[in-house]
Length: 342
Ligand SMILES: *Cc1c(COP(=O)(O)O)cnc(C)c1O
Image 1 (cartoon, rainbow, N blue to C red):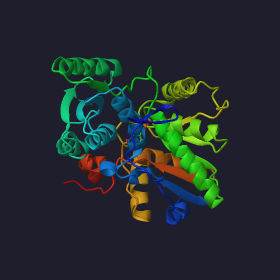
Image 2 (cartoon, protein in one colour):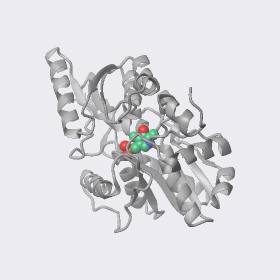
Image 3 (cartoon, rainbow, N blue to C red):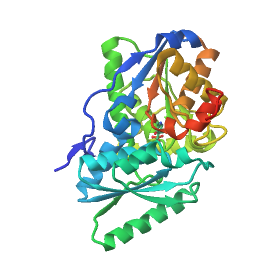
Image 4 (cartoon, rainbow, N blue to C red):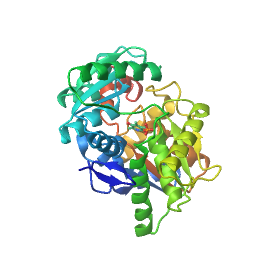
């Protein structure tokens, strides 16, 4: 029997609230009154991250459908597929991963270290897909792999990531929003603004929807990590509309609630610009806080830029994980952050 949460099947993977930690040296360096970090990188499962919260609902859905094999697709250094492989192991499910060639890189560490190494250690079956920019083609290829497995008797569940499907993963960030609201009440401090990565949109849409549903009006800036702001904004609007449909309620969002900043995406998905590199160095060397070049450092670059534009604010950063990618980007980071090469 799979339990229900928010009216949807839910398989627990991590049952503790993640801490909110102040970063006073960083705050001082960037002119903020305070910087708080929501440590969603510390939620346990195989190096953790935001996907743990999302997977509780995908694994719940898979189990409630009687599946024994889960399939999903992502970039070569996807944190989602690595965490999914770990979550499948927790529930005795087989895991098939399709790695999409989305980032123009031909680098041994990128292709075999970091998350790829972890996928292998976790025992997932890996498949490769070469036209990574094409979401529909990637989904079609995954469906073919699933069909092959069904012919061999597997009961398959494909993690539905295409934006036409209900964003089950966003429910995990409705949970995070509830945790945050409780933490604000306990501490008596409410931040002026929250910064979060906006990729598939599950994290961003769940967070903003959950906060507004609980009556918390803190502004949330979604920092683009995958596609430009003009494409990302309608995606988050669509995701929030789908959540309202899933709950059969009117959306609690007001016009202007969806804020998207695309300034830190260039040069593109999985590639770090100068602000991203600065954020990695500053956080590591001021606070011992490790950020990754694909996601979290871009979000931090957004927070830093906002603090420099408008000083003396209380800012909150959602640390969504991604640490293992550091090792996949070792050559780039040595060059750009440290100014050395191997
Ligand atoms: C996937 C990911 C994101 C983006 O989250 P979405 O829910 O896909 O928008 C942010 N940070 C990290 C570390 C991730 O792995």
